[in-house]
Amino acid sequence: MNTLLSARLRCTALGACLIVLGGCQKTGAPAGPAAPAGSAGSAAAAPAARPEAADAKDADEQGVRLSDEQVQKLGVATSAAKAASFAPEVAGYAVVVAHETLAQAVAELSVARAAERQSRAALARIEHLAGTAGAMPADAEEAAARQASVDQAALALAGRRLSAAVGQHPPWRDGETELTALADGAVKLVRITFPLGELKNGAPKSIGLAHLDAARTGKRWTATALWDAPADAGVPGRSFFALLQGSDASEAERLLAWAPVGASVAGVLVPESATVISDSKYWCYVERKPGLFVRVEIDTHEPLADGYFIRAGISAGDLIVTAAAGQLLAREMNAGAAAAD
Image 1 (cartoon, rainbow, N blue to C red):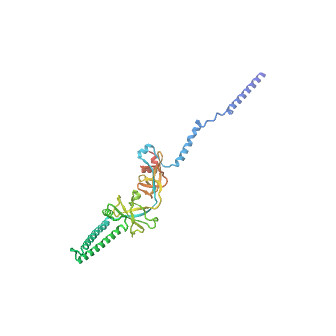
Image 2: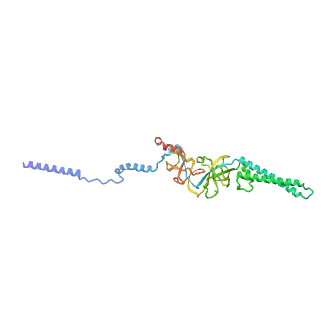
Image 3: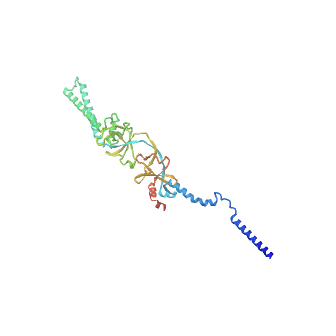
């Protein structure tokens, strides 16, 4: 009996020990060392954070993203933006004077000059022979004097008619060469008018001229020989004459005119080939990063000979898309179709 009781007590004690040891292994097992920052556990969580950072960065740089293959396929070409300067200007209008009017006035002046020289020479000969054996009768001398006076008056009238066509103070002395070029049409005479009160600093030293569609073509010429012209009855303002050479302006054609009225401003030149139109605005694309083309709005109210002057938004050296800008605009406007490429 005692032996059986002792055996049961030993079994009970052994079971209790096993229970205690099991609990210790379950709850008291030491935690393993903390995983280092570069371990697999932390790496598994990192990819979930990277897309958020990338999305936030891309949100600040919206544009058209292309691979190298897509750039070559579309034919995208870029060129570095060139530094440029632009002087504030006042706009006016001009008209090319038909050379037929000038040719007639110049011809009348030439005829009058020849007649005046001939009559003056004839009178001088008669006066030189006075009192000699070869002296002319008094009535002949009177007729010669009268003819010389008439021809002199005709010459003065021809000069006044010409001054009505070319102004009273043209920038030449005898004007033989310049008048011949104007009469032949080799040099064009342009009459330019600016609105009243716009030229506050007096007459400009040079004037830019262009076709009426200059906002589209951007082509300009410069006229430097300026002098006052009679007021234009059809356009109130201050008028000037100028000589224009090396242009394709037609006779009697109306032109746009600009006169500088302030100091030059620094900026960049955007070529005309780089411009696209969207929502009634002008834009160009700039490659901000390799393969990232961002659309930038430009102001076309300050045209230059080869494009448009831009004050801000583009810096000298920025890569401007000069070919296939229209294809970039199409992809940006139709992003769903572009994503499927």
